[in-house]
Image (cartoon, rainbow, N blue to C red):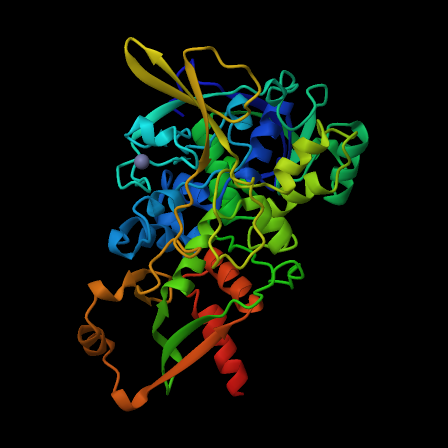
Length: 486
Ligand SMILES: [Zn+2]
């Protein structure tokens, strides 16, 4: 722990079982709980990026999703329908991004939002002008949108009562159990916890103190993705080596809201006939865009709305339930604070037509461009809430967020892709089918192809498998094919 003294740290007491070398619970303050809850607001792209910062050999923790992220990083810009789309897909953020800056320790590493307008100031003053959050965007006039403008927060209501904390009340002390259930620290709760664990003798218990800075929170996140008991993983790592991760059987999800509608996605899989082993899969850009869309899903949406608290991450399911099951007057600050955790929304995003899951988005708001003459040159800033009078040398106009999609898509419809079982996705333009056939080392008579129509059930199974398996397609689509065959 090479933490400098200036780095914020949480210090808390752990109650441990002396003989079993197991954490029972931690006594923590509201700031630590705020940081824990903020994890639910993070899109999966952010979670993948954060976990990559820690230990690379443990990345199997997020199954194939890491490969999805890499595939998008490596995607040729020829496959994009607009230049800025790769950046936009890799950098989703939830609407609580700004609020989370007030956390004592904020692990979100997403770069702050920037605003860009057309190089030509005259163009940005025309009606229907656009802004973009990425400087790779091109204006409709053909010029680059790389003129950065300041953002001014004009809405005073946005600064609500954050002095006490972000999500939870600052007058409560909390208990966090080894499997990340959060509750107020009352004598009743402690008794109940000990009884539930079959602990009758206080003498079996001991105390430890623990310091957690930014890096240790990332370790805790990694532990939460790997194990059911992330605190014990941190305190007694030697005990966890042989503990295989318990993965709950994926129960049915609340898919009534999720509806593929008229959207038809297909995946062509090639299997070895004799073994039913997946050799490779081929897909068009719609399916691949759907898979890239996993990265924009906030963790809270994934666990709550899509997986009904039976995601592969058991301790994170518990963390989510702690918030969703508690009433506002118990310890949460407000219904708004609760919703930020259990129903996170994406900020400033046009959702792809290939996003099959119900993702909440803050409707791309109109921005208000305020340009003014300074030292003989026009400067500009943007603001979201136009509620003030202009001065005589200022010019005002309304800007809307540029829609980077073409026909609702982030990728070109003509792009075609190859996928491996662990979701490494490459454009066929960069692969040779002949080389692939040679590398398979399978007699051509032992090869069979299946074209699968992706239902919402399949979509959820692929998402689930991508989180816990390096055989994501085998565990979802191939399983379905072989089961149908029987
Ligand atoms: Zn322009």
